[in-house]
Amino acid sequence: MQVSDRWHLWLYLCDKIQLEVRAHADCWATSTRPAPAESSPYDNGRTEGVNTRTKRITRLMHGRAGFDLFRYRVLLR
Image (tube, rainbow, N blue to C red; front, side, top):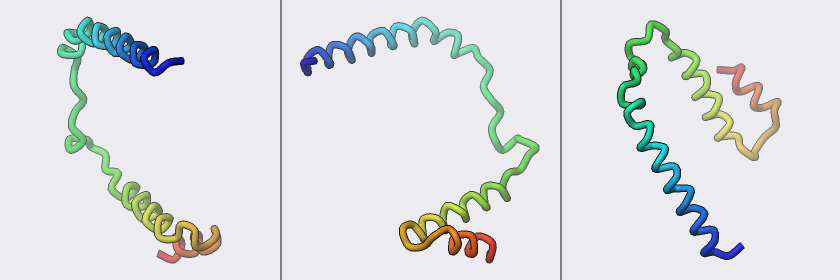
């Protein structure tokens, strides 16, 4: 496949997508928007804290140690 053929494929694809977006723009404008996260009655702060901590430990230990040390650090707290 030639580069110009790929370019034309992308061009035609983008044109078709643009037509579809324009055709459905009115539907999207009238749809209801979700409530902001601040108004949610549920709090997932603790879960996010655990996820963040686990990711931080994983990044610190990347390529240095095995699962046993990772498990020790997670449980050590």
